[in-house]
Length: 402
Image (cartoon, rainbow, N blue to C red):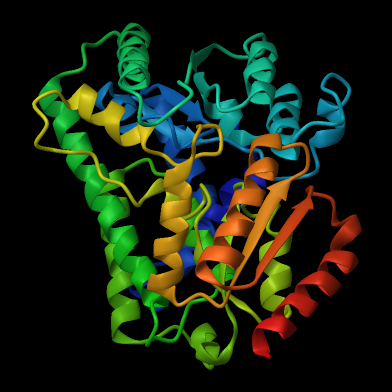
């Protein structure tokens, strides 16, 4: 059912022994998604439900409390876009087209492994794409409210999470117990706190880990089968970094410190991140869904209603689909101070109207309120504009050095 080459990579990534693997704490994270496939195959043999998710609005605690395993789905490669464009319009966000292309061609092993897809209405493009995807695989769509601060929005979102709870209970044929949900909330909070500790390695005064190196760990959080074991591995990496800075970090403190914000990226759609660091910058902080946006906020474990606590936490996600999205601007201001940022790069995938329009507010924040240089990049997954982007990024970094 799964690609044999991916399985072979996963076995290799595990290494011959824990002793060998411990010499390089990054190794298992570099091929974490491949290792995940082996564990997913074992889970499916044990009749465990696999729920594919696309967005950080999906409450993974609730999915796990139902006895299912949430896994991140593909949408970060250019290869399946051509197949998607036979059905979807070409003037559409590449993330949406890539996601649908993988589904319609069944070339994403995680989509293949998923028994059901949990989608969300973060934008009109995804909402309509999910209508088509529902013809390919069973799909539950969570409807997002328009705002983060309205009480009516919270009540609406609370009802949506209750609706997801009922769906999961029907799917798994078991009732979600509140004590198990509380346990999963605690576990995911601990993972978020460990990630916050990991990202502190890029605070001023330490040799920073570059963004390309950090990306493998940040992406791994979407491919977790056993969260307890994952937390152990994550803490082991953090402890190793505390003992000895990673060799890639040498002389990083002299490079321009960049905050990368905007739309999500990953391996396959990391060209802007790569270009920044090839040109001599170091991305010490990523605010997007791949990075801090998904880990900065905890679920309130003291709330007597854990479902409502989940609703409050996930509704605070500062996505451009919310209006007004002031929490994103507040977060960017805080991150600029915390990481002593020299310049902000705002990445927008072409035809992502919400983030493209919001870039105006981010530019105003950067240049008029904070007083640091800002660069907005609108692109897609194609490498065709790499040369042009490289010139723009090099010029931006030269500005920061002067």
